[in-house]
Length: 276
Image 1 (tube, rainbow, N blue to C red):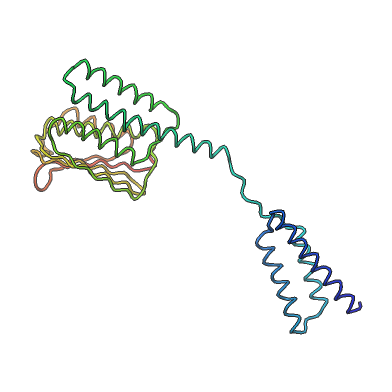
Image 2 (cartoon, one colour):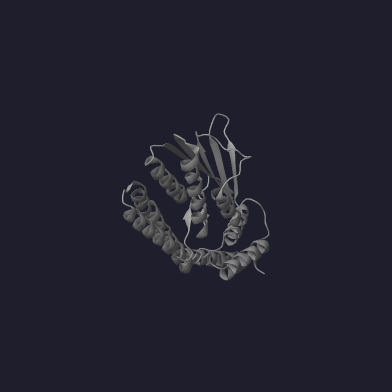
C-alpha cells in the first residue's frame, strides 16, 4: 500500500478519535479510565514516531484499535443514587431526633417532677406519663439511638435523682465511636443503671457519685462509683442486684461490683456491640 495513503488514513483515524473523545466530554459522558489511558498511549506512540523510525502500518493498527476502544467503551456514568436508601436513612435520623427530644428534654423534666414534687399524686401521674412516652418510643419500628444520646439520658436521670438528695454528681463521656443501638438496648441499659443508682441511694450512704461512660469500636462501658460504705461480696444481696444480673444476661452484657481501694463501691456494666 502507498505510504502516503497510509499516512493520510492514519491522520483521518486520529481525527475521528479526537472527535469521538470531544463528543463524550461535551455530552458529559466521560470514557472509562482504561480507555483514556489507552488513547494517551496511542498519542505517545504518534509523537514518538516523529523522532524514532516506527513502521507506519504499526501506527495505523494502533490508531484503529484506539478508535475501536472509543466507540465501544462504556461511558463512566456516575453511580445511580438509591433514593429509597436515602429516604430510609432520613427516617431513621428523624426517629433518632424524636427519641433524643422525648428522652433528653421531656423525660428529664418529668424525672425532675417525680423526684422533686411533694405531691404523691403528681409523682404518680408524672411516672405514668414518662412510662407512656417510653413505651411509645420503644414501639416505634426501627428506632435507633446512638451511644451519645443514651449517655446523656442516663447521666441526666442520675443527676436529677442525686440532686434531690444533695449528693454530688460528676459525669464523663469518652467516645472513640458513636455506635447506633437497637431499639430495645437503650431501655435495658437505662433500667440497669437506674437500679444501680437506687442501690447507692438506699444502701451506700454516699455523698459523691461519679459516672464514666466510654464508647469504643466494640463495646459500651458504664462505670458508677460512689464514696459510700462499700460493697461486701460475701453478703447476701437482695432483689435489686438479681434484677440487674438478669437484665444484663438478656442482652449478653457483663456486670460486676467491687469495693474501691479507698472507700465506696465501683459498679461496671459492659455491653458488647453486635448482640442486638
